[in-house]
Image (cartoon, rainbow, N blue to C red; front, side, top):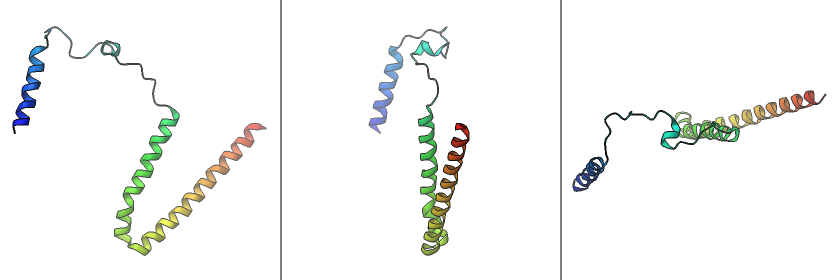
Length: 106
């Protein structure tokens, strides 16, 4: 309890020491006024990394629920089956890229 009181006292002292302009806007008119650098958006690599980690993270979080519902044997079998489906879909994507690349060179 005393730590909370100390934090509140420090916070109140910070507010009291700052000069207040009643006519000042609540938000800055431009981002440069508060020192923001211009942001041109995320890079392609950053977007791919974020999307990949989101997908993998969601899959990993679902694994315990799969095992609980299906049991150990059926759960492991389903994970192996999904691994084969994933490998097949990656193979199809790579074939499509190769075909598109070959068509672009002709």
